[in-house]
Length: 396
Ligand SMILES: *Cc1c(COP(=O)(O)O)cnc(C)c1O
Image (tube, rainbow, N blue to C red; front, side, top):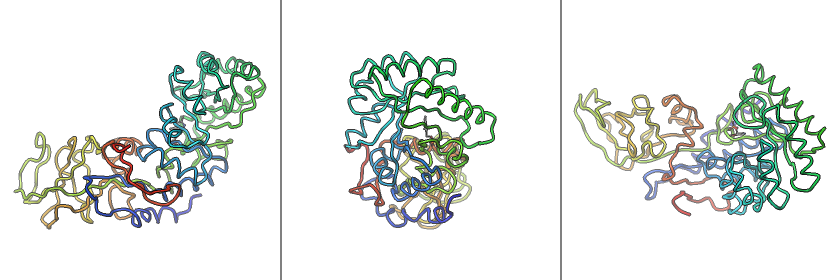
């Protein structure tokens, strides 16, 4: 279903654009917009419908504004975020594509409506609160089909859609969307999936019977697009993870790189770092890398992780600290300033987000969103980025 060409060229964008000298930064996250654009195109083709680019959590740490621009240029038609503040960040940057926010305090609804941001509503109480805002707020009614996280419970759906239809007839709101979220997006054959799909179909019909005419019905996330587009795609798919290369046949879009800032010679049998959790097994050199768990290097990966130093994989030794880690680089000479790739697309043998997720007992999503605010982001590639430039969040 997916072109293998995409994965074999995974490292292409970085090879072309990345890995220049760090120019005064101890570390940077290089975001390859060619990869993001390719992922949008791949997923849109697989879905065969419109695509909402989910740029919540600062686009999974990749930079919400530049990533949103790239996604829109590559064919995304909607943007999705969790919070109203995230939607406003896009609006303040001049991005006016349809945007949905799905978790907020109704007290802030007026701000969102003034900025033309669509709001998700899951209960008659929230509907009433949103309908009090002037300007006929655009709402998406969210049904809980079995994830049991958020959304309107099935037994209240009839009342929600009837109330919404009344408010719409009175021009108090406009119901733009009806939606839900899957618990097992990647498992088309799971009983839970069958239940959710059936309940969703019936509930969309109920909304129509109540008189609602939503522009967009949406259900699928990345995993559902990849595993079950035919039954889940509807009018729009809400794709987050896939934009960033999480999923089969997609291109990782972020590389985390740093440099060796100190090299020391140590004898065999020396304890390294707090509590001497690590111990040298031979006379060796230790290279100091100025990134730690405050930057997103998971402390839970202590004792398992390795990094790419000057073209080869070397193990970290000792505990991952807040601001630094130590690599056991062996006897070969390594100069201060040598490049360290902590995380990359994997094309050259460097550790990937998947590797870090395995070492830390988590998923790639948490690895990417964990990359700290003090790591400068550098945006490379062409699509949708007017000026490929540094945009660390410490610089406004
Ligand atoms: C994060 C999120 C998505 C995107 O899911 P991915 O698995 O990252 O594609 C879609 N819908 C909702 C409600 C979400 O919270």
